[in-house]
Length: 80
Figure (cartoon, rainbow, N blue to C red):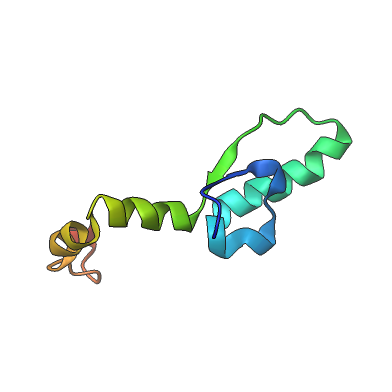
């Protein structure tokens, strides 16, 4: 079972599939800067498992799919 909230200091680039690119980069940056005594605020990453849990428990997948079914992803005006 995956954790839902993971402290940034425990996250690195290997966690990219679990927390996404920006969060993995933040975790990596914290790991590199803290040993250099650079002050970095604590934080946490929300895992994709947590996101999936919210979608399932709140029955949002179907609603989101209905909202997006007519979206033309090749039309920039439609995407804005």
